[in-house]
Length: 166
Image (tube, rainbow, N blue to C red; front, side, top):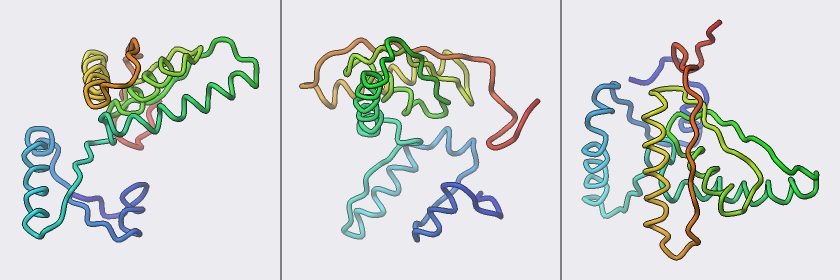
């Protein structure tokens, strides 16, 4: 169910006139593929085409934004004389971390990418980010092969989204 007071992306969705469906966590986790298929079928019956965008945009298509960000970072690193760095990002769906990890490798960025999981655990994200990277490689088979080393800093999952903890 949607929160009574909208904020963040849900508020922006509403302002843009988007229709948003919220599901209980258990249903979402266990039925997400079925739910996506139902909505794709629904829109197909109306003569429309629906694009399935996974949680967080975490797939091969979604990775490109962060791959491009690494291209920009490469130029910034060169201009600033940065020879080695660490890029640390929150990891909630794995998409940002996947794109940054692929981008750092593709653009030979002198940086190590770390994801700090905000849900689930290290093992989950090691697998999730690697799976998203594999899907990207399969989707874009003509792109240079790169080594995608996934690194996760575990142990900082809080009590909930936007809930501060000591």
